[in-house]
Length: 608
Image (cartoon, rainbow, N blue to C red; front, side, top):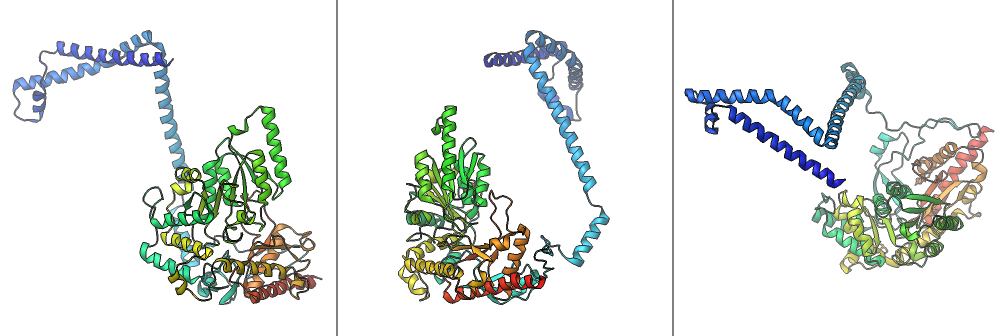
C-alpha cells in the first residue's frame, strides 16, 4: 500500500510539471514578442520606448490570458487525473475538506470564546466600584475565619481568636524557642501573642536551625555564590556545591550515586514518576503522604493499596497478583513492579515494618521505593534512617531511596540515592530535576555541613568556631533519643499530675521511638463527635497552649486531606528535638494538661 501511494505522489508531481511546461510553451508561441527580464524591469523608468511599451503590453496580455485559461486548464487536468488515479483524488479531496472544516470550526470557537468573555467582562462601572471597595476595605482574606459552633454535645460558642496559630510570623529560632514578629503577626491575628514560645511545632529534629556552624556556613556560602543558581541542573544551573552535596550524601548512605532536587516534595514525586509508567504496577501503603501520591498519579501505573503497615494484607495482595499472572499466563518480569512505603510516615508518626516488607519483596520479585524524609537524621545508630534502624542497606534491600533535605538536614530540596543506573536515569527522566531551577548553592553547602555535623567529622577550625555547647555526631543523636523517650514517657505517665489530666482524653498514636508524636482524642471523647467537631476541639487546645502556656504545637485536623488515600484522624502533632531538655517537656505537658482541662472539662461542666 505504501509503494502504491508513493507511486501516486510521483505521478501527480510529474503530471503537474508537464502541464505547467505545456502552458508556458503555448503562451510563448502565441506571443509575438517575449520580453526579457531587463525589458520588464524598465517598467518603472519614465523614458520607455515604443518597443518596450509593446513588450509590457504583451506581458500584460499573456498574464490575463493565462489567468483566464487557468480554471479551464485546471478542470481538464483534474478530470484527467481523476480518470488516471481516482484514489489520489479522493485522498486529496478529503484533506482539503478537512482543512476547511477545521478552519471554520476554529473561527467559530474563537468567536464563541470572545462572546463569552464579553458577557463575563465587568463594565467600567463595576471596575470603579471594585477599585473603590479595595481602597477602602483592603484585600479580602484568602480563607474566611472560622466562626462555627460545636453541636449539642459540647455547645461552645464563637471564638474570636480561635486561629491564634494560623497567622504567626516567626522572626528567628534560638534553641528550643520560637521568637515571633509581633507586628506582622498582629496584622493576621487578633490575639495577644507572647514574644517567644517553646517550639514543639517545626520539624527541626536535630536543632539545625539554630546551629552556629550551619549559620556560618550559610553566610560564607551566600557571600561566595550569591542567592540563586538561575537555571535547571541540566543547562547552566549545576554548581560545584550541588555536586559536593550529592557526593557527601552518597558516601554517607553508602550508595553509588545521588541526585539532588531543588524541592523536597518534588524529589519523591519526580522519582516515582520517572520509574513507573503506564502499564506498570505499584503496590502502595494507603498511609503514604501527598508527594508520593502525586507521583503515583503522574505515573499512570496500575495501583493497588494495602492497609497501613499491615504486612498480612500486603501478602494477600501480592498472592492475588501472582494468581492472576498464572490464570492470564502472564510473565511477571514483563511488567515493572514496585512496593512503595515511607520509612517513617509523616502523617502518622509510625514506622514501616521494613524487614517484613523486604522479605515479601524478595519472595515475590518486586522492587522497593522508600521515602525516608523523616527517618534520615533521626533513626539508626548513626542517623542513616529507617533502613539502618531495621538492619538493612540501600541498593541491596531497597533499590530506590528518596528523602527530603528540609527536615533533619536543615537545607532545601530533596535527594534520591541508589545505584548509578538509578541516578543517571533521573537526570533525563526526573521532571523536577530537568525543568526546575536548581537549589540555592549556599543551602547545598549547608547540606554538606549537616552531614558532617551528623557524622561528627567537622573540620578542626569549624569545631573551634562553633559554640562549645553544640553537640555533633553520636552525642547529638543520643540527645535526640533522650528527648523522644522522655517526652513519650511523660505523656503516658499516669502518675504525673498534668499527664493524668490527659488520660482518657488524649491518646498517643505514634511509635515510641518516633520524633513525630500524634495525640488524638481518646475514644471516650471522640465518640459521638464529627470530624469537624474534633478538629474544633483540638484547635482550641492548640490555641490555649500557645496563648496561655507559651507552647507552640500543631493541630492537624484542618490540613490538606483531599489528595490522601487514607485520611488520619484530627490530631495534635508534637515534634521532639535535640534542643529540648526535661524542663521543656515539663512545660509542654503542663500546658497540654491545663488546655485539656480548660477546653474539655471546664466547658463540659458549664454545659451541665
